[in-house]
Length: 359
Image (cartoon, rainbow, N blue to C red; front, side, top):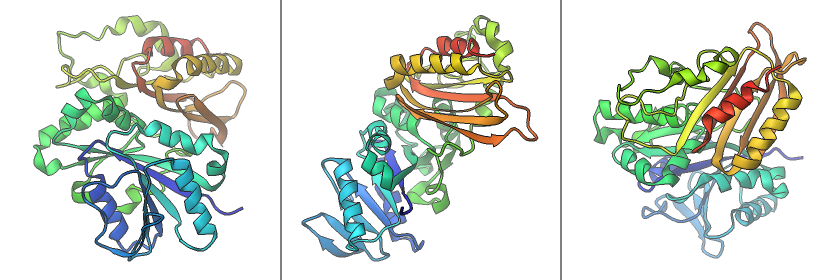
């Protein structure tokens, strides 16, 4: 069995700088052989380093050994064709980058790697990378749900064009993105300038990868609240005892300067130092996925299960959920930490339901 080829999905709204970042990846001497799949060429064609062009297959060969192909049709077919040509020795690559269109929802692209058996047997989805244009982000996020979904799906977020705005505006945007998706590290990348290791091998879809939740997100109660929109924390106290001080609070509310933003994509965290009852949790999660699967963009967690001396790790995209047994609880106190990112999710009902699944 040959080693699975890692795949990175590069997304971001129109004008966010995806082509600039791609050009840098493709022209840098990093020793990797990368196949890039673009489902449409941007206005700025990546053609300055072309050595060979195969018009029939729309594949271009770059000077550093990378290849680039354009599709306007089925992603599964494009991936399959690339692998066939690789097996035949016609092209050579050791990883794939898929650049989505600026208005694409990355969800169906990610699902491809779990729903098609042939693709899943040859490729491994590594991460979704989302670029956010600092100059136009707030307007795009306010008006375009696709832009919100791109943020919600991200395993890593890069703020681009931050040189065009003030430091305060960057901080404001970072704060908003954090509350939409607390599990994705946020970096700045102007003119495509970011280390390669912040793009590749992030293991965002690896079950046993460490669950990262930004610590600032978990201390959101320290933020100043505007008097005119009280957060009504009292109604959460009935399950605070189950999930610590954090999970009962609605981190999807708008803090600081964001009271004028109504993001449909929001996130919340469930935490508990009590174990889950396996049967109750399985039944509850199955029901949640059946009803809200399409609204659940990403979810991931490290679970403390009754009678199990190891961590149970789980994650999912929409209705597709996987779980695995992880490392033993060694020097740390067992506990559950789960993050949910989705579209207009019934936060309180999910938190209460999870609390009811505790042993």
